[in-house]
Image 1 (cartoon, rainbow, N blue to C red):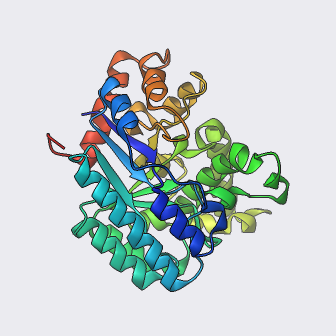
Image 2: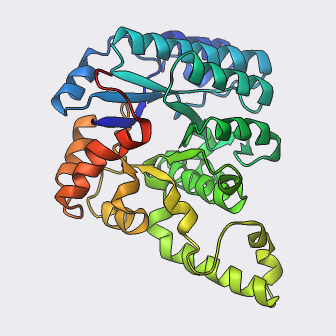
Image 3: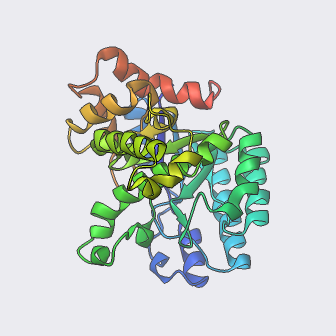
Length: 329
């Protein structure tokens, strides 16, 4: 079964309500409810299911009541979209973190009542990283449910440095750095080790992670060695003692994650991605509406760095083994 795990849809009703709740940049950013052209692209590429998420735009309302209202609204709209299309569209739900109790309640509603594929997360919730200690009860409940957590960069929160505020650099550079940061924090903080039953999925192949894979590996080896020896500089790496990282294979925790393939600009990218994670951890991702599902599928089908078997895994097998969607959607 072919499943696109990385797609966006912002109904006009949702974006206009976000604007009314104070997120002015959302005004006018919504799309029509007519998804016929998208369904045609899915048919053309033999894609049975596309999983929607509301990340990418900054959708974080900065007060409790508004955050809860916005989360419930987009989740209800996604549930209706799924029902209207006989399950061709599924969804990753949105939760109102950093409000932990309310986020747990909405996560439970998404998974139990709405039948969503998992929960979508920005890499930061109101400048707080996903490994924030206050979020522990939320992650514990996700772990108990063996839920899927889809991690995606978000709008202005991509800015890792003030110099990225201009020329669209917050997207061109910041978004990729943001996803890499989230993956590393989730490992280094011990979050993924404490909650091993959560399936973490990272957008855009984990950002820059596969391209600096060897640099990170060598830095971790250095950190483990210096920390163990108590050498000068070892204190700088003191945090590593609290992680599941080991000297024999320091990158192992990252190979337990899943990564979508929405890097369809250059074929050579897949060489690094495959070398880092293995084709068995890759999921088809288009980044629709910002990119093309047709081009995303063609990128995998024609990629010279993937074997025929690996292409089949990425396009038709890996996502189904993760989500277990039934036939007939």
